Length: 301
Image (cartoon, rainbow, N blue to C red; front, side, top):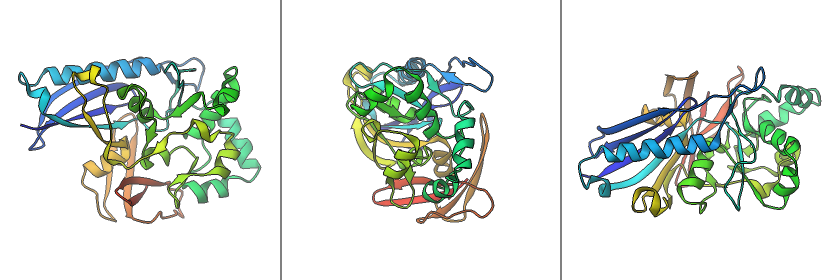
């Protein structure tokens, strides 16, 4: 019986599910992790605790399978809380600061200052997003400005940036893979939706060195494999997507006009708009839904 291991790294807990060939859940494990609120409006996670909890539930779920069945796990897929921002040392793999969570509001003044300079129309046209602390760009800029030597080290290529997917891909592969997919990259304020790549003008606006950015890979398809020591043998990593876009696909909203609403830490309504990004006249966000092969599909959120 072939299996697929799915890792679901959320805002308050990490889960792992094993699905069989019929799509049935063969095993499930979940573990909560700590939330830190160092100041009003600030929300942080411990990156190492995120990783340790996710690894622990993956091993726990695999241990629930019949004896020997773990060797039949054909692939691993990953979905994650979006926008949460991490920076780590490429040489040691150690974070330089706690993960700044998507809920965090510490960069509200920075966003207001950029709006006052008239930058929001450019940002919105290029990224489909609004200037808001919710997204990763100003969080990353804050870390580079506030952590001693972080900016100079980032410019020298010593530091890596990523959302939670990139952090877990790095840890799962023993540092061999620094990557993200369009569904996550499109939530950073640094990604040109039309071109499907990082944007140098936006990087300049937010003060982010290109050297610290992950490679952008398809949401579906083998992009690497886990380090053999983690699960006893390498497992191909064959899928990665931000949680809400993964839910859009999982609810089979694969054609333009199909929509879903899912409820977790927040409530998220997404509408599939097909192969071209669609600007909203009513304040919705335009976002990448997924990239499969050479085709990117988009959504309004």
